[in-house]
Image 1 (tube, helix red, strand yellow):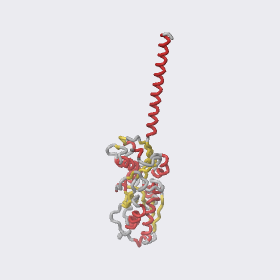
Image 2: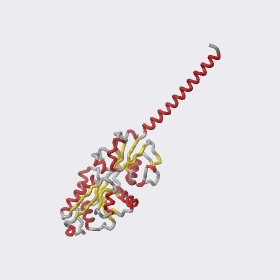
Image 3: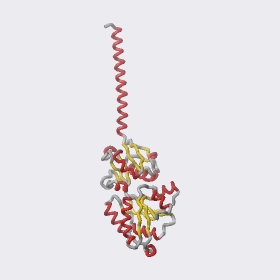
Image 4: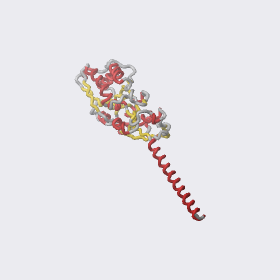
Length: 294
């Protein structure tokens, strides 16, 4: 083989080597991108303002994300300043979170919806928030009805020792009473004789609110007052039916949510008593532990 042919052969081999090296490099880049996508963690959170913020604060408190200063109880995913675990957030209606749990890595779920889905917040939640009084579930009525006998009789029944005992025994930490000094179920300023034969209507979530109201119903029945519980599975209608006057009261929400709802919708619904808190929790979906977030 002549010198010219040898040079051509070497040039061809060099070019082939360069092509193979570039192809390997591009393949490596593609694999790296795939690994990044595979490492992305998907967490579903409630899509209403206050419960989304509450979920994000839970994640921040456990070192999974960082929110900008001052984000507080109105924080959204747009307020995340540091996301070291490459978390992708899916914003979902709170009531639907248990039904999509198996389609995401994790979901942050309100205890009432967790209980409805046979999830035990004490045993099944991987992370749980503290029992912050800011998120105590409240009894709310239309503005102007705070001091009616119906309202006071309902509140007295719900802040009773009977209800506090039921919450403690039935939910074993998944729901916690926030009533400091439970009473006997009755308000001495109420004219129960005048209320006898009347009906108090309350819009409530099925669990645990309607279950707790069943105890209040027995207390009121002893005075001849009926309690009708109308169950809702969304976070909008219970405030609308109270604001319209169609229902006397509701029991399903915490105060930050009510304040935001009033601001967004022009409703005039007010809190009259805090009854219990439901610690929000992070539940595993396709992930069964926190290992993916370590």
